[in-house]
Amino acid sequence: MSLTFRSFAFQRSLRLRPALYTPLPSRSYRASATRLAGKESALHNETRAEEAEHHKQDQLRKQKEGKGEWKDELASDSESIVKADRGEIDASEETISKLQKEAEQIGKKTH
Image 1 (cartoon, helix red, strand yellow):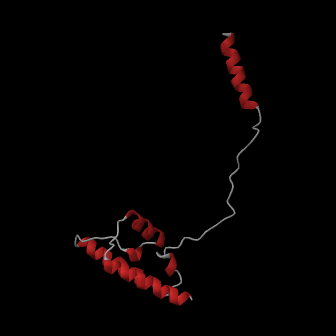
Image 2 (image 1 turned 60 degrees about the vertical axis):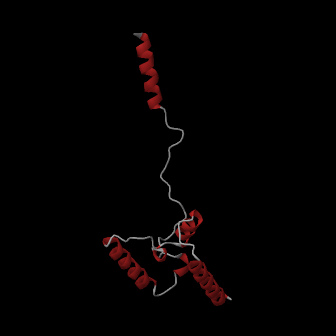
Image 3 (image 1 turned 120 degrees about the vertical axis):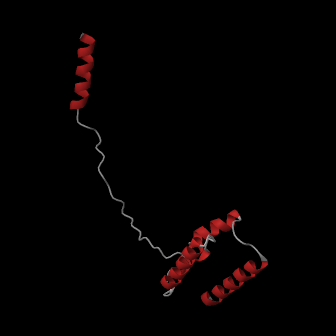
């Protein structure tokens, strides 16, 4: 019986002690805006909203027809890079030459 009383007294003494550390909710000093613009390289493109909507409607139409496919136009640059690294994209001669032309045009715009 004394063992039960001691364990009860010990448990009670633990409850009565003040906490050494009380975690307080904190808020990070960093904040970032969520942008649903798709490509990071097209954030400042004024026609991006219409372009994205067109590709979304096209994708929905194709899904209803049973011909759904992944659209690079709706993916972010990061998603496109990951897909390319995994080898899950079309890497034909035509696609590669198209990408090279796009890169050349972007290079001319920035320099």
